Amino acid sequence: MGFDWVFFTELIVGGLMSGVMYSLVAVGFVLIYKSSGIFNFAQGTMLLFAALTFVKLTEGSVNFWVALAVSTGTMVVFGILVERFMMRPLANQSLLSLFMATVGLAILIEGLAQYMWDSAIHGLQLADFLDLALLDPVNMTIFVVDYIEWLDILISKFDIFATIVAGSMILILAVFFQKTRTGMSLRAVSDDHLAAMAVGIPLSRVWALVWAVTGIIALIAGLLWAERVSVSFTLVEAVLKALPVILIGGLTSIPGAIVGGLIIGVGEKLGEIYLGDLIGVQGIETWFSYFIALIFLLFRPSGLFGLKTIERV
Amino acid sequence: MSTGNPILQIDNITLAFGGVTALNGISFDVAEGEICAVIGPNGAGKSSMLNVINGVYVPQEGRVVFKGQDCTKMRPRQIAQLGMARTFQNIGLFQGMTVLENILTGRCMKIRSTWLEQGLNIGRARREEVENRRAVEEVIEFLHLQGIRKTPVGKLPYGLQKRVELARALVAEPIMLLQDEPMTGMNLEEKKDMSCYALEINREYGTTIVLIEHDMSVVMDISDHVVVLDYGAKIGDGTPDEVKNNQDVIDAYLGVTH
Image 1: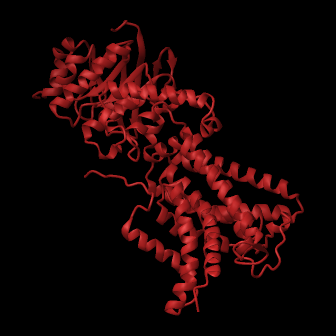
Image 2: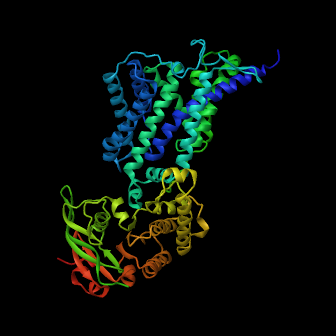
Image 3: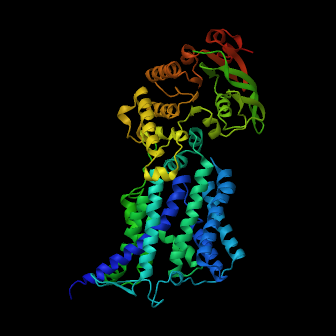
C-alpha cells in the first residue's frame, strides 16, 4: 500500500486550521503576559463567560449582530473594570500577587457566569447564524461539506470560515502590537512599571486596552470553539490546549504564538494518525501536544521566539 | 547658567511610612538652570525626596511646586508631561529591549498620531517617526552610544546601562532632569564621564539637574547648589563651599564624639 498523499494533505490542512484556532487563544495569553509578566489564569473562564453571554442573548431571541455587539461591549467594560479594580491597586507588587489575582478573577467570573446566566450546557450553531450549510454535526470537526477540487480534500465550510476569522484577527493584532506605540509601551510596561510611568507611558490605559482586547479575543475564540465543544465548562479546559502553544512559541511573542499554534495543530493530527498506529495507542491527540512542548522546552527553554532575559548575578 | 528663578519649590515636605519618618519638614528651592545636588549619608531620605518630586510618593504634608504648578498629588506620568525626566538608582531600563528601543520609549510623550496612522505608517506617524529617530540619534551621539544601538541592554556592563538610562531621559527633552545616584557603582573614569555629561547637558540644553549622590567629592565640583539631608531632616543648604564648611554637615559625614 502506497502512502496516501491525499489523506496526508488533508491532515496537514486540518491541522493547520485547528492550529490557527490555538494561535488565537494563545495570543490572548501572550498579550497579558507581555503587558504584566503574568500567566492569565482567568483566560479560560473569560472565554466561557463571553461565549455564554452571547449564547444567552441569542437564546433570548436577540438579533445575531446585536448580540455580538452587546457581548463585545461587555468584554470591553470587563477589561476596563479589571484594570481599575485589579491591576491598578496591584501595580508594582510582586508578580506572584498578580498571578494569584488572576486565579481569583477566574473564580469570580465562573461564579458570575453561573449567577448571571446558568451552568447548563448550551449548543451554539454559529454556522446557522451565518448561513453556512453544515451537513452533519457529528463529523463536522474534520471533514464534510465542501470539496476543494484540485486536491480532492474534504473540508467543512465552517472550519474555513473560522480559520479566516481567527487568522485575520491574529494578523490585525500582530500589526497593531508590532507597529504602534502601544506595542512598544506594552513591552516597556511589563519590564518595569515604575520606569514606564516615569517615561510617561500611560500605564492604566495600556492595561485597560490589553484586557479589553483579550476579552474580545476570548469572545471570538469562544464562539468559534463552541462550535466543536459546546458552551459549557469544557470550554475552560479547551483553553489549556493553548498552554503547549505558548511554551513552544515563547510567552512574549505574537509571531511565536502563531507558529506554535500551527506546530501543535499539525503535530497532534500527525501524531494521532501515524505515531498512534506505530505504537498502537489511540487518543494520542489529547496529550501529544504537551509532549511536543516538552521536547521544545528541552532545547529552547524560553520558546522559539521567546525573550531571553539576561540576569547578572 | 542659573537664572536665579526657582523652577522647583519644595515646601515643608513630610513623608512617613507607617511609623518611620523618611522626610521631616524639608524645604528648599531649585533655581532654573542650576545643577543641584542632594547629598547625605545612607538612609538620609535622598531617594524618598526624589520620589516625592517625581510623583511616585505622595507626601503627608507639604507641597511640591514645579514651574509654578502645584504637582504634589500628580502621578509620575503627569509630571513627566510637565517636562521632568528621571533616572533610577537601580537602573530602570526595559531589560528585554535593545538600547535603541529603550531610548525610543523616552519619546513616547511626543507622539500625537493615532494607532491607525502608526499601524499603516501614514500621515503624522511617518513624520513623527523621522523626528523621533533624529532626536534619538542626536542623544546617542551626545552620549557616545553609537556602537551598541542594537544590543539588548541586559548584556551591557553596569556603567553603560546607566548611560543608556540617561539617554532615555534626555531624549524626552526635559526641562528638569532628576538623577538618582548616577555614579554609584562606577569606577573613577566612569564617574568622571558621568560628571562631564551632567555639565554638558546643563550647559548645552540649559536643563536644570537635580542629582543625588552620597559621595561628596564627586558632586562638589559640578554642583551650583548643594542640599544636605540627614535622618530625614535638612542640615545644610547652599553653595558647595558653604556646605563644606558647615559644622553639622561635617559631623554627619565624619561622626561626632558624644
